[in-house]
Image (cartoon, rainbow, N blue to C red; front, top):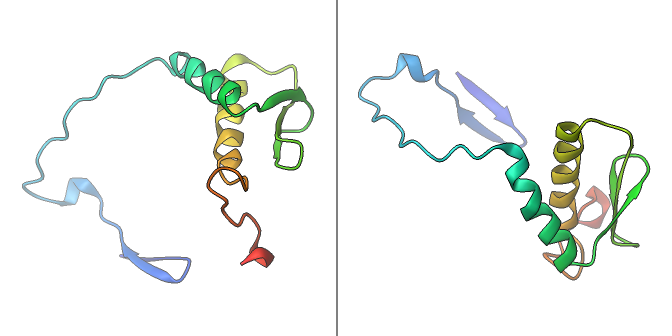
Length: 102
């Protein structure tokens, strides 16, 4: 069935309806919190401060706000999400982050 995403059409299939699909290789399933060290290294490398506040990334002050208190998994999920936003900062990938900047 065609699915419209943005201005492109993609065909999406249920893998159970396909034949002769090779089995995917198994990958190491790291515990989610083992990635927290990677996130901490990224924050340190790019001098990103983590402060308390609503969950968001502020490019002007180069900080990630995370609400507290939250459980460790939720904190990791939000922190990782905001790290992705931080990659668009002008001194990193310089992505246009808002529609009006295009």
